[in-house]
Length: 324
Image 1 (tube, rainbow, N blue to C red):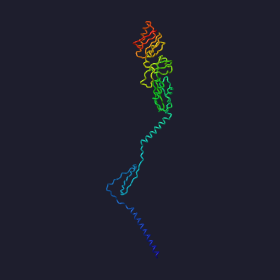
Image 2 (image 1 turned 90 degrees about the vertical axis):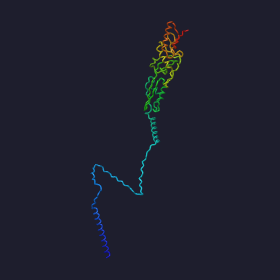
Image 3 (image 1 turned 90 degrees about the horizontal axis):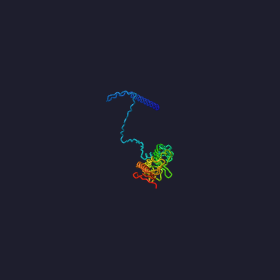
């Protein structure tokens, strides 16, 4: 009896639960299908214009403010490394670059000087100038044009000037101007050439030697004054004034005679008619002395006087000497 009543009670409980479950399902479906109430807006309803399919979609931005007392939010700090170049680092890199440049300039073959290109020469050959320069194979940056010019001029006094220029990467150019001889000076069995400034230099070749004025010196002449404009020019062997005097006298030297220098009487020659004529050593009034000399000789010959010595060194007081 008890078992039968308990089974009936369980059956009733199951029926009740099933009915409640069905009621909940029906109620949920009714709420889902119920229409929503109308929404009334205070503003007029604006119809949105139809969006073009080609326009890009606009993103909406939302801002939210957090108002939570007692709570603080700390954003992580993001720091980017800052690269600062100091003067010391910059100086180091500059020094490094300069050192590399100097090393390359010192060692690369392309910066080593070749044989100098010589122009303007007439008697001195380029090989002689290159031998004195000794610059071939040297780094071009170590050469100084002024030093090379001094080296050339001191070894070759026959050069009136020498201009040296350097061009990268390894070109050495030399332009020279040679002195032009005007006098063949003979003294004590030796001879030398002298230019118009009185500078003596070693003769080279025979070109133009037949046009030189020959002077036979009995003693060393007084030296000329050093050049005030050219510090590398050698001291003149004779003064330029004496050179001018020689040039004036040369056309009047009798045929077969040679111009002579005497330290006491100056310049003169031996006349074939038996006397020595002297005119001094300076060029001043040299043309006047020549006229005085010719007038005196004509006067003596007209009177049948044949002197052994005539001097017009002082044109206002010429004199002659007879043989004893």
